[in-house]
Length: 280
Image 1 (tube, rainbow, N blue to C red):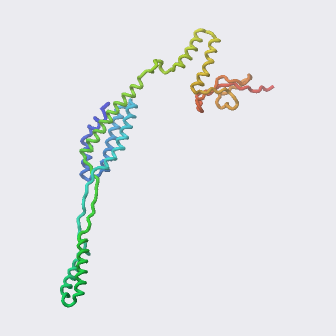
Image 2: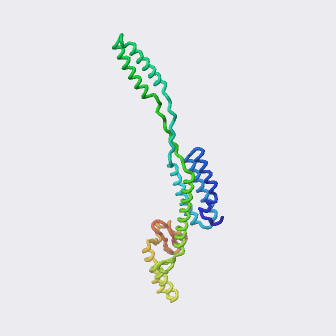
Image 3: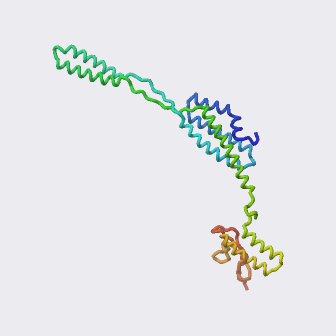
């Protein structure tokens, strides 16, 4: 399986992954379980991919980044379709009682119609009111539950398309990295700038000419060039002694080599001789 693409590694486990996705859908229809399956599939594919490219750190880093993005996006599967399920409707007990009382009052109103008309009217009115209330509450309102579900086949196709895209981006990014690494300098001068080449050419000329005065004149250009590059040359002083390696000497204190700094960062420690008192 050496140098297989991520898609080839994924397809080698297609049946296992699809069966797991179908099990998630048929058992508990859990989108969370589906997201965990996708995360696991991507992680294991990445591990196998990196194992086959142990000597190509750049491709491993690119694959790590793309896989991390895909795994984070896998959580979007939780926003799948919703399956509605209505609870069974039930008759309310107190509504039945209200209707029974309404029937009794209605019967009483009929029986009292001749002897007590006013009482009959009151019973009829109360009966109608109770019948209305009981009828409105005859059935209990059913609760609707919502459970997110996933389509296993659609999830697999999305996973496959994602890995195909990752392979394509890996090829493109790897080609760009390799092209940049192999590209020569635009001015044909390698890693050296034009100013550096000019300075070194002067020093080489002094070397070949075997002329000490000419060589010193060329060397005198070095500090100015370094200052132009933002590099500071610090000569020895008691305040700057922490930048130097000091050697005791009977001669006067002097800088043998300046300390080289880039901003506050010490690039190279300096050297100095430091006069010591002689005992008589």
